[in-house]
Length: 100
Image 1: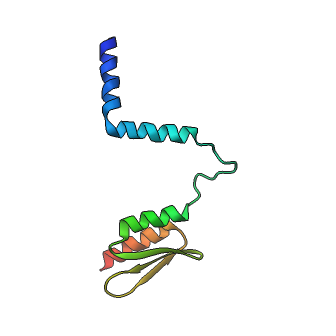
Image 2: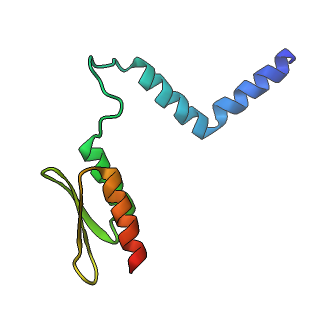
Image 3: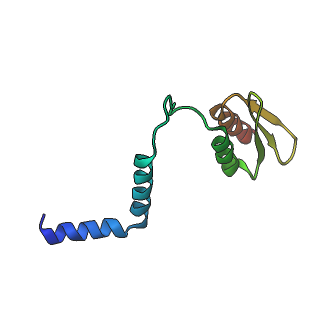
């Protein structure tokens, strides 16, 4: 590729806002020190609840409780769903929302 073509391609990549955001995230992740004994698959309860609330807030009250997670319908019959993990609660929410 000619020098002018490579320069134009680099300028297009730099101008695209999504690419710029990814570069910021990538550089932040590369600079962040890894904690000793860090488990990449460990669930962050606060983030899990925030994510479920963002997805289901109009239909369910969602909270972390001792030993797991709980969701209660906002409308109609007050049904409570409980699960040990966020994934289990998400599956229960999907099944419950499909039933009514």
